[in-house]
Length: 307
Length: 317
Image (tube, each protein chain N blue to C red):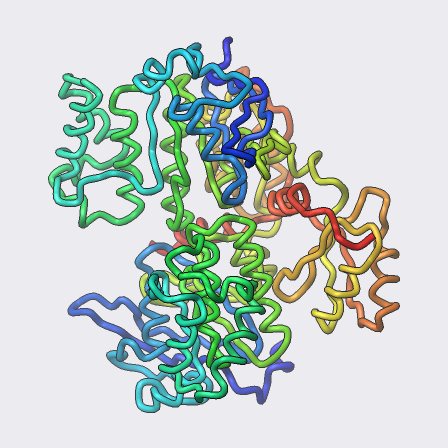
């Protein structure tokens, strides 16, 4: 099957600043691919190029078989886009908002609006004003408006920011239903809890795609070493001692203990030695299951200024 | 564990607190203690009463009934004394966009009664701490979202409070900033006598707290250290990687010992009835074989806080 999105060394420069730096990836139909990265990592610029809103400086990309340089209009007609600041009309009803977007996309079939209301579970609220809906319901309506024209690809920008785990889960079940029939979704997110729902996650930093794989495989394979929970007192001297430990990938505060990432060969004894040399009392150093955050923080860690 | 805290004063005490808005009890007989020097995470669905709780604790709302004490002062009776010890970062906070970072802090320092000679060194110190030292002269309107969040934190801390209330402090904040925000909070708590109550919709953040309380319909349903909460579902979760995933989920859902089957990208999390994980593991393979689905991998995994959250919500409608 042809990929729905394919990029080849896609690059965007603004003056001296390289926002997107040689990014290559392909997304097969029916996949949910997530982009995880800090602000300024190039996620949004990449998506804007894929939507045909920005011309790349170099490299190329095809979306739904169309070249982003030559056919941006054809792409925009065929994709859906849900922004984190969704453009819903607060003083119109749920149904009126959908009718409005159906009009924008040239969808004449009234049955399609019923179908959308049904799909996202907003049928009982179709006559309610959007201003009175909770964030979770608004996010569902925003999704419905973005897919009323039945796009084969849709983009979601931080779709469940600020909603609780149950609402997040309900929203993702909806996305899974859509992609099951071959629709493809690209998602940007700031949250590990949300990235866990993606089929594959691309970790971006400084305009580059540092890793791209399923959350499970990233945790298994992309961590440059091993994760440890270090229970030691007092915490801040322990942090300083491990921070100065030669070769350690990163160490951070994790509530009442420390989280450390070490290179593959490094054993617990090395950590213990660093702590004991500084006179820190160690309770336990235990290997931990890597999290997506461990992977993200280790891959995006600045090289240590210490030699 | 309890013994360590015996005799210690609690940073926050709420006893049988009710807040009614008409017939609705937004907070309903809430009893909550946050110990000195701990980070307590408040989680729960939207509308559970987390934000109302924060507002009651800082005296912005008066309780309908019940007793509240913060840093040893009764709220609302001794709210002035209590507020002198409380730093509050609401979900939406106001900064003066036309004022510089330092001028904003001066404003918050003055309304918090810092003296004319004290505010400047204290503001410099707190700006350095949150990493905004070099931006003291920049207008607040010109800051990025993450920097505004740090300025909000600085404003909440400028009067050296002993109790910090953070209402979903990292919503909309990028992961690098979120990480440094949490490093600051944990550092403050480790350094001295600060206690923190923080609400969050993100379970990875809840996992960093010393204790987590799960709120629902205005009440605290369960609380404990993250490890203890995860143990509620010890030996109950299976991870399944297979294809096609959604039909596989629908098929295993019909098993009477599978309480819940959630899709996460390329895998399923199955919550099994207590004591059935091993037999469910075998049956998933049988179901898959019968329906000609593929199971690439199936393994027991430790429960996450998200699994616990969902199961608590289902248990108590």
